[in-house]
Each structure stands twice: as structure tokens, then as C-alpha cells.
Image 1 (cartoon, rainbow, N blue to C red):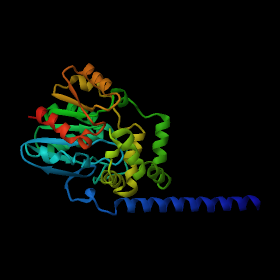
Image 2: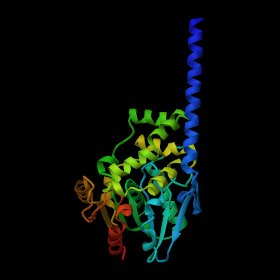
Image 3: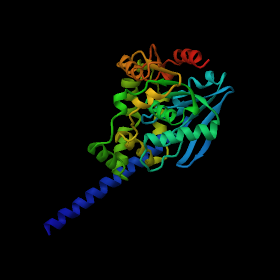
Length: 317
């Protein structure tokens, strides 16, 4: 009887805990998206086979595709400071990758090749001709593999703050597979996601890792990333679980050495290992040009857009 009594209390406590977690999850999703900010605007929609992709098209001229980073809360919001100036001489396309921002977030495993397919299909079906490209952070590996698959789709490519080549080689392990499994659990996984991806965590990351000047991290920026990370509710955790599980990584060294496109690599001058990254990429492809943006770290397009635009005007002229 005593064992049954203990089991009853354990069941009650477990049920209450799960109910509380579910309530907290729901509250966070509602409060993070209730302001209907930038990520609720009505963009164009590309009906891709794995889900709806939100994108924008602005300006006239040679096509230029901007692909955002893949940190939690990423979306095409990170290009807001440079879209208008670039659209004076280019037809500028931006998109929210599958699993990010306004685009659909299906409950699938996200891989590098999935995004390679998305980018190549987007260029073929929406842009319709060869284009220039700017990537941010981890999305450089997508562009490199997509270009390796079909070089006829790409012209000049600029990589802003790309991952180290060592980071691209990290593969799923037993530990990361377990973490991915836990993060994809219906209530517990969503709760864990919300403890790691929220307003306070995103703000702290920008101040510590992404911006050179922590005082320039403003509320509007953090709210935009928080909102993008919570759109479509609990399905937001699936791309995060794939990232944490190392499923989106792919070794790009061989592909980088084989492509013949003009490549320009940009890093913020306050990025600790920017010299190492430049040397790694040039070691694989000696024709790669490199440069730095002063007063910036991981996101020069947000922190020092005028400095970045000077390089864009020269490279894409």
C-alpha cells in the first residue's frame, strides 16, 4: 500500500510538472510574437516541396541573394541595414531559410544538403538566372556546397564571418544524437529549447559573441531575433536540435578548393580568430580575397553596415 501511495504521488508530481512546462511554453510563444513586428510582414512566398519559404525582392539590376546566418532567431532581419542601398544597383533577394523566421518549420531533421537543395531550387525557380551571393556565418557552407553542385547558378560570392573549416567537420556523435532526441520531445524538449532560446539568452549572446560594442545591442534587435525564434510555436525547436546535433555541418574543404568563382571573405576586426579563418580558406583556395571590417565582430552588416557596404560596392561593381 505504501508503494502504491508513493507511486501515486510521483504520478501527480510528474503530471503537475509537465502541465507547468506546457503552460510556460505556451506563454513564451504568445508573449514573444504578440507584438507582430518585422517577422509578421507579408513577404512573397515560394512554395517549396518541404515547406513555404518567405522571401523578399527589391530593386532593379543584376540579382543578388542574401542568406542569413543559422544561429537561434536568425532571419533576413539581419540584412535590414544594407538592403535599401544595395537595391539601387541590384535586384536584391532575401529569404528565411526553412526552419527559420517566417518560413515553415517542419518536424524534420535539417541537414546541409537540405539547404543546398533549397538554395539551388530558389535560384532556378524564383531568381531564374545566375546571381551574386552574400552569406552570413554558417550559411557559407551551404553556398559552397551548392556552388560545387552547380556552378552555373552562381557568380561572385561574399562570405561574412564564415565558420572555421574545423567547425564544418563536426559530425553527429552519440552525445549530440541524444541531445537532439531530448530536444525533440513534445513538452520537455520544447521547455529546454525555451530555456536556451529566449530574450535574455539572445541578448547575452549578442553582447558577448556577436557585437564588438555590447552597448549597441538594442531592444528592437533582440526582440526581432526572439520573435523569429518563436514563430510557429514548438516546431521552432527542430532546426535548433539539428544544429545542436551537428546534422547541418558538412566538410567543405574539398568543395572550396574546386570552385572557380570569385570569393571575398569578410570578418569583423574584433573577431578573435579572423586571421586563422582567412588563412584556412586561402589554403584551400588561393584566389580567395579577404578583408576586415573595423568596429565590428560577427555581424558587420548590423553593427557597421556602412563599412560593409564599401566592400560590397567594390566587389559587386
